[in-house]
Length: 343
Image 1 (cartoon, rainbow, N blue to C red):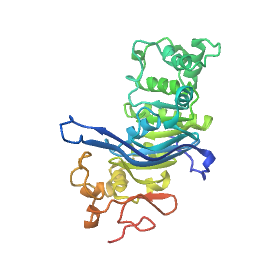
Image 2: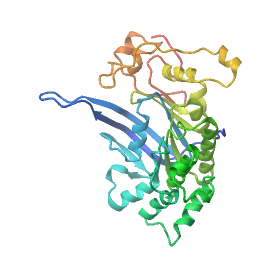
Image 3: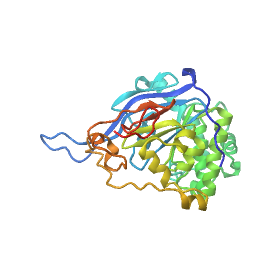
Image 4: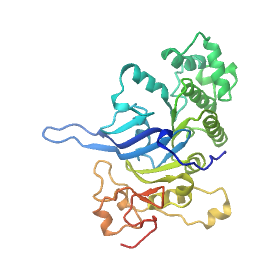
């Protein structure tokens, strides 16, 4: 698997996506007379910045809010509060033709490549449809457009007349990536793009994303629960737990020297492809139960499972604060460098 290069300093002109204070909740259960309907806070005050030509990885357990964050940026779901700017445009205020243009600039690759494609339509139809909808045909034949896009993602043009069921999982995912690239987007939201694939195919898809980024300057929001994928492809990392970012910073630093106990536990659970090192490493096992997302605990959400918990953790809600330069950590047990301290 190819690894990305270390990131360079970013200026405001290089930022494609800037989201601040995003909140998104969903109602649960039935509404009873005289009672307020309970809600799950899927995204709870998240900030994210995606520079041009960079990959920002989002990692966390299932239910941590990763997919909801990606869907909010793509405007596939609305936010309760907060602001999202894409290439300087306020997403909440975009309407009509400007909204259609925004749809072109933000494309999504979903987790399951089979359900993302219409089984009754050919691959050529799937690739030509977004071109037709956005009026970008320019007199070109659908067959030529399909052949060009398939070649771009490493597939043979002869696959154009086939149906999704006739392709392997890796081929279908490449088709989904080709369809997303058809409109020339500025940002690609890849939501678990390799989780349904075998290891060899997974590596091919990830290498393809790196190559496309190098060629086009594409920005990528990579959502994954796989530590190795995030480590190798991301420039920056957001670690999410129960809808909040608990740690963020350069991928090389977060993945090798985590400062939040939740990040430490996540990384310790990821296997190392070296039997000797794997036997010697210390595994951090989290005890306790995952709190209810409808009724989160008072204080820190991670306090019910944290190995470093103290009484203050159960009453104080730690903000995400800057430590050690570009790093940010939400933990009261850390000093200005993000190191463990007794309190």
